[in-house]
Image (cartoon, one colour):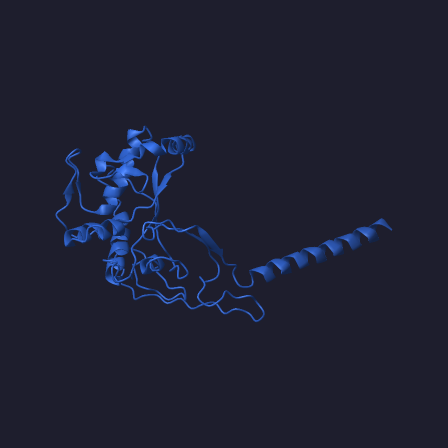
Length: 276
């Protein structure tokens, strides 16, 4: 969302003019190849800068009076739609109405430092649960009603090795030990599921196989972390990445190579016998 120079009201959405040289070729490439423009809207940070109760309800998809875009006449009942439509307006203004939008990540922290308003389990559960319900409704946004948008929730697991404030390490639906932080109704079909929080049992690791150190992200995933969502005290945090190989994956590849070598030897022997 930082690429926008204006976003309130949503119809005023516009990209920063000084990004044109870099952004225009990217947008042209996306349009020519039918690829989406991926964004990271975070209503949590909008609430962090305006902690009024009505703003919290607006950010959590909860009942509220709504906000009218005076220029377009459209009424918005949640911040997610407002942020999405601000990007849509910016794309349309530059002539890229054919470029779809995908939500690369969005979420809400369930825990934060003392000065991080709104970072609670109840708010995180409300945001993600209501987001899922909103998307399942296929309502779309005021600017693009009935148009669904592919959305990825940040994050599946906590990033417990990440720096910065406590919230930066607390966006996960699951802890790094695979236990659930809270349930958003994704374990069962339908957005109104009231299933109890799910606990996933770690897969036993065979003797002699490498294991990640205690406190590392569970095996089987490769992740990249950055300053976003948010920045730390206004300063960018350098990119870092960590990859984890599933236990036994190396040995399985080694076994496959061994069998291929054995079969090659058998075939070579047969060819030599046939040639005599």
